[in-house]
Length: 317
Length: 275
Image (cartoon, rainbow over all chains, first blue to last red):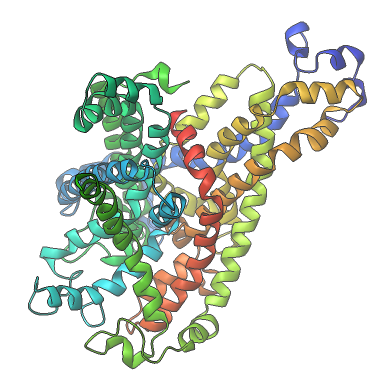
């Protein structure tokens, strides 16, 4: 890059069009500039993903290495026929993703519309509303567990004062409340993400459109459904897709609040994989589960984009 | 009259509900952190600690190990930010200023990474770093976090660089600067806000990441804050006061960074989502 011969007179005149003019001579500078990034991404993202597919065909157990070796599709056969956790975990994953993404979208939209109005101290309110976005899943787990706790938690006290419940409940270890409890805790952290992206999109809608609607006599509801919503369509589709993938894979809260219990009632597929990876030792089987979850996500993404007719050109703007 | 009613229903009431829901967990964590052991479980609940104490913070910081966790998080975070910034400024510059063969392929590659489920990485990365002998080394986390963040920060950075007019650089070169000099004296100063924003987002990510850190660390002395907190939550006899105090310790830098970078967030994320 610092070679003095590079800085000739022709280059000074048009520093960015060297490649254009001398087609035969390849300019290596941009390749050198992206090389480190390409290396790190390929070596530590793409290569590992590749090995997951490879290991899924193996028995690869750190604690019992004598049985390690190629076993073909045995892992997959076991997942679909013998595994008692796999199928229920799919259903729980569906429940988790649909409730999270659906509720985050609805409440995130409400918050975005709210914060898009003009009022005093708007900046302060916005910062306050977005703060949970910066809080880690583990921190959120601690904070909510301090509230849910049967003995020292504040929720039992509050709810008993209002009269919703009559005696202390163990919110996180009761099968009937565990799932709902982690859904609420994750919503606390997830709504700001939707609110931020939707607010950004709201701000890009030209004001003239609203003025025109007003002149035409459209009320608040009509304005929302005929102007705001269509204008936000692409943002919503892309955010929902990204968020679905993200929540599908998100285990921080489940891992720390319930660990997948009680009675596996909060074990999503990713939670299952994570506990296999952290506690179990058969990486071959874990890899096979990972491949299955990847396939599910891939199919979902393709179908989702087809069904919603996401406009590519506009996305690539 | 009707107008005031309307303002209450569509603005003030929802704002209040939103604020309570968002802020209550913070309030309760701080409240717990300043209470003595006995007061934490006392009924009726003390909504304002009657005898506030900082004992929990002392215990969390020196006895439980939050000083170590904090230091580890800081080492991993700062190193990752440095690595990510250098690499993404380079690749972002290449993307915004050069035309070259394979540029589109590079962009597609960056886009693809956004769809890689993070949980897919825990097993293979564990195997890779085990073979490299880097389990429990901060290096394994720094490399992994950089790999995860670079695609996004490269795109972000190329956007920021594109906003710096090409002509300024050309003028500097005509005046006798070489490319590196013009990068340093002309482009770089104008990039500072973008660099700060990118750095802050990377730092928040490394500060908060849990699953990979859990998988790639197996010595308590190398735990980052999230792993340390999780470990403490899982103990048989949880010291709630110290746990709350530890959370506050982990919370403060993230919140401060966030408040600082918040203004860039709406425009930055909005731009990123739109492509």
